[in-house]
Image (cartoon, rainbow, N blue to C red; front, top):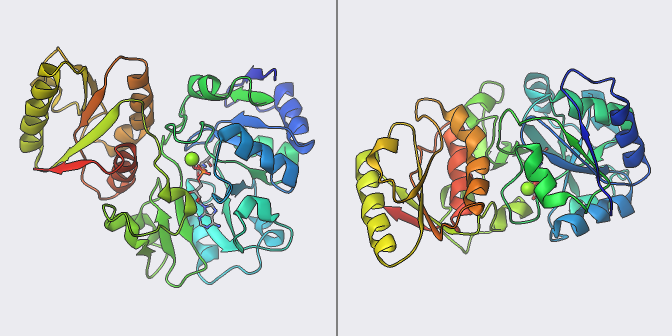
Length: 351
Ligand code: TXA
Ligand code: MG
């Protein structure tokens, strides 16, 4: 399939190319587009055969439901059965933005999108291109992250082109994603509402609007393989680069020592070693290794922005094993640690 690639700036919302992409979507085609979290792979969210294309293109298991993207809060009316208590305040505060809400679905929502569940995930993105595209298409867009299943989510147009060129009708290349991690998923059908996936809107932020917020227990006990997460997508290994990733968790100086010892041992055994460190610890490591700083420990936002980009960069190198520092799992750090744990397949050494 030939994939049209349209470069569009955030302030070029009248570009005729966006109109073309909206037409493709309305007619049942596939278009990847930027959002503030990660790039999405969009299709007409009310058309079962268009939705099926998303699963084919990504190689995604059909029991993993998709998020419907809307441009205005009022659009949820026809997609949900009820708006539970508290949801209005949450939407008013955090939409548009990196927060997905789960509601009981209305009959209008095709079961292809929900993986057969009676609930639907809805998000109103803040990225100007995403919103204009949804408006022009005039339909809610089903959009998972625009990566092949199992790969790190794309935070730059080159990532999308690498994964999806030749597999989708069009790609809107619109620069880098501001947040760099997928949205927080909050289940509003439970009382208190439950975080199923940590993301850009943190638990602390939600507690400013909701009296109580619970968390899927698997987010805490992430090491227990017998616990099944409530968001179907959270059970799959994700974000994995080709090399295997091992996390070393603990006080920063001890973690650095352990990583250096392991790196020496692995390179002694003939393996090419990569290291994920921070700006603060960069100078501790030896040049023989492929060393990438994920950002400053003082600035969790830069760490979130860089994570998937760095995981993908390792695929361009010959490293066979990646040793990574960790961050404290609070605030945005919770989402970063969640993705790092998944990238490592939960291989974590405690020091
Ligand atoms: O930031 C984002 O959310 C990006 C951008 C493109 O909007 N999208 C994204 O979609 O990350 P995806 O498909 O990669 O992740 C959606 C997550 C999955 O873990 C899925 O299982 C969960 O949301 N989910 C979707 N519908 C659900 C439902 N009805 N109940 C529980 N979990 C649901
Ligand atoms: Mg995804």
